[in-house]
Length: 65
Image (tube, rainbow, N blue to C red; front, side, top):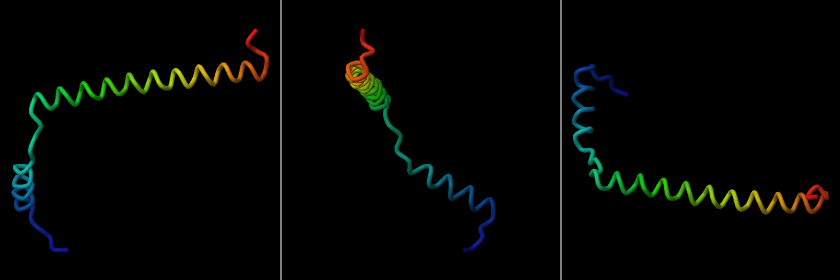
């Protein structure tokens, strides 16, 4: 592998960084909202699964009262 000097490396990094397309403010907001929505959906799903498993264990072991 050929070695490059630090100045050449920095130039290449800047050149590659200029090719990056950053998301718009609207795209970032939509993506953030989607993450929050899916986190809430996942939390509700796991809460429901946990409740069902809890009922099953209580039924099996007679700990439900």
